[in-house]
Length: 328
Image (tube, rainbow, N blue to C red; front, side, top):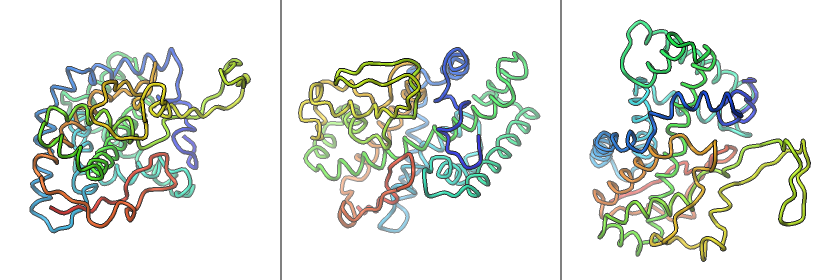
């Protein structure tokens, strides 16, 4: 990747690849993210959530839910799944911010982050070769060493991509989801009284609170006539915000209204087609556990200040809360 570019400029990033290479690489990791495998992680996700909230409760008030809970939860889980030391997670947050930046990080900052992250992953892979385990990282190393299905560059890039993608979006959705429920007290009360509503509440949160525009820059390989009468010409760049479909009134009546009782939750928060989010199943379990546990364990949770006073990230491909101050 060019040192002054963001990940969308990398033609070798999984999100930017076409078959057959995209298919080959995705198959190597998709078994770790099936619905059954994701569900098997629920007890561990619950244990991590309980521990983080116990620590938050024991600390001072107000607390920043983003720093204390929303980001540490998915970071811990992706680290355990891969077999990466969780104590290194502060570095991942910093590197992720650089890779997702669209304007706030300078070229030297991006170059420094890319060099540091590359060196970290290379060292991690070398260390694991000397002391193998039974984690996803070991499976990926084996795919390179024993079966020659991954090049050295593909192996390192896959590990870096999973670390970044495995926590950034989920952490932001946890924060945005809790904020949304706090801003809709009647629906928060309904979920609190009936925990069976947590999965549908999560789907509505996903529909409305995806922390990005859901589109990556693409180039049309052929001319396409749109229903509007316009034409996308072959060779033209296209930025299609797929998640805009989540607000299509033809499919979601009154789409701007948050409603945890929606009968149709077929949103496109995780995308569609070959590039459907690889970690969607794990993210759903994490969100259900995270939001359900906060609701249950903090029945008097309240936002400190007003929603209008909250600071949001800018200059990034991901729009999330900088902080979410809460008390109880």
